[in-house]
Image (cartoon, rainbow, N blue to C red; front, top):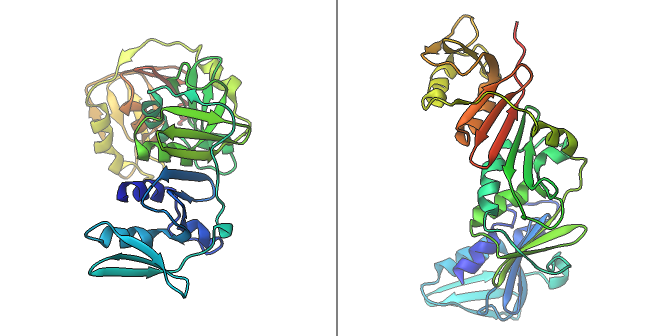
Length: 322
């Protein structure tokens, strides 16, 4: 029972003064559901044979406090009692009409590729939360090219994703994070015009989809770019970490790449590490780290710095420096 409750807890808000019901579970005669208004989690839980809408965190704590399987009943005053002697808890509950319950997305079920979660883990660091660019907060799965794209203001990241979905979709960042939290690869999915549902046996997750103006043509054009690959030195990231504290602007740390190594800009404080040459350019340190984490080779060009990894390609705009 606890595993089922914890699964659903991932979708429930901790606090919500505008819509308090989003901090609750919906228990519906053998199933339990939670939502934050954007995604729903639902799982079978045969021990919960009643119907109620209860405060999620307190219900979880009450069940967890029971040393043996708890019993459930309602008082004449309308409270839910969770009991396993000597422990007993009383919780208020709402009616099912108060809860924005959901059902799985329409359409037939499709078999899900087992590689979905690794693709999401790779591309998540490249997503943006910039509200003015809704597309940048999604991973675009592009059926025609068999690629998954993520981008922010400075980076385009691309991962092989052949036969992942039967149509183009933009998976929102909140769904990406929840799928990564669950970790188990979904077995099937179904989708309609507004949502997608992932299935694991008797569990499912339904999420809204975003239909933003994703600059897919620009992203696809980057796939044609070529460069002379050079291996990324093993100590490049650790060397960058050593000199970041000496950048003159800690909120905008710039790393200069030269034929002799890397350095910060000259200023009141500066630092450098010598001994390797991957090309001459300047890049933001906080953009480099997620790219190096999944790349083995790179190439420095005038207009773009290219990266390669296993089933991965990345493109980063270099900075103009005086």
